[in-house]
Structure formats: structure tokens, C-alpha cells
Amino acid sequence: MITWWLVVVVTIATLVAASTIWPPVADKWNDADIAALRSLWIGSLGELPPDPTNAVADDSRAAKLGQALFFSTSLSPSNAIACATCHRPELRFTDGMQKGRGVGQSKRNTRSIVGVAYSPWQYWDGRRDSQWAQALSPVEDPAEHGGSRQHTVHAVASDERFRKQYEDLFGFLPDLDDPRNVDRVFSNIGKAIAAYERLIMPGPSRFDRYVEAVLSGDEKKTL
Image (cartoon, rainbow, N blue to C red; front, side, top):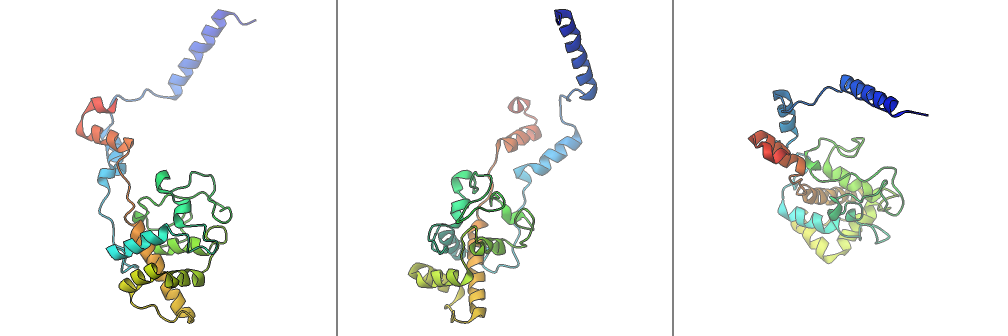
């Protein structure tokens, strides 16, 4: 039988041990802490860097076409999957699942594309070095869109609205029986999607509001 005084002794010993392992938290951030907080604050985010691999990266016409393609299911042979299937705006451009699901199940979860234009690499493992190359990868993935570049370019060419937008931006569509032309048009489609994705930027979070309060010295806002 455990008596009450034994419980008290054990509890006090536990608290003493805990205080020995974990030092008390300082009342205020030191200079190094504040510098670290500032570096993570959205207010320290610089201007969006240019994309030298994408001549239409900041062209509003490309962004408009890219947005339409992003939400279109026509790039998938099943006509059921769009980029927005896994990158849902209401879920901060993720899908909320442990692993992404298109026509099949992906090996990994869906990474948000909010602010990824700042990243020098794409995907969790960095296997794509540009945003437009990443945008095209799911199209040919058998577990995502389950399509091909041939299907993709013909889907754009056969849609009157997409074709006009494409040609206004990149010029007349070439002969799509030539594989080299298919590759070029496919790349342009990815660059248009990337132009739209570059506009998907992060907004201030509770963390950012907290850091702003710390930097302004308004202690009441940090409580």
C-alpha cells in the first residue's frame, strides 16, 4: 500500500529532477533568439526571385492559361484528375491525406505549393530543379494524372480556348506528329502552369503576428 507521504516525496523528487534537466525559460528573448525569429518572419521574405529557365514566368497571360490548366481535368486521360485534385486551395494547396491520390496512390504525401517559387528545388527529395519541371511530372506519373506528354499537348491543341491562349503566348502550335515539337509544347505548358503557381504566396500566420509583436516590443500582444 502506498501512503500519502510517499506520494508527496516521489512528486517532489520528480519536480526537482525536472528542474535540474530543464532550466527555467527566460522571460525575454535574447538578441540571438530575436535574430532567429526575424529570419523566419514573413516580413523578412524578400522579393520573388526571377526564374531564368522560364521566359513567361511573370507574364500575366501565362498565369491565366496556367490557372485554367491547373484546374482542368482534361490533361488526365481519365478526365477526372487535375492539379487541383491534390493541391486544393481550401487546404493550402495540399489534400489533407497521408499519401496523395490521383488515379492511384502516390508514395508520399502532397507537398503544399504555397511559396515554393522561393525554393531552389522541388519535391521532398529535390528531384526537380524548376517549378515548371515539377508541374509536368505528375502529368506523366501513373499514380497521379496517369497521362503522357502526347495526350497533354493534344488536350491543349483540341480545346479552342486553351489553343488560343497558348498561341497568343507562344505562337502557332507546330506539327505535333514531330516528337521534338511535342516536347517543346509540353515544356511550354509546364511553364504556363508555373507562372500561375508563382502567384500562390504565403500570408501572415499567428507565428508572424507573434514575431511582429516581439520586434515591436509590444509585450501584451505576445501573451
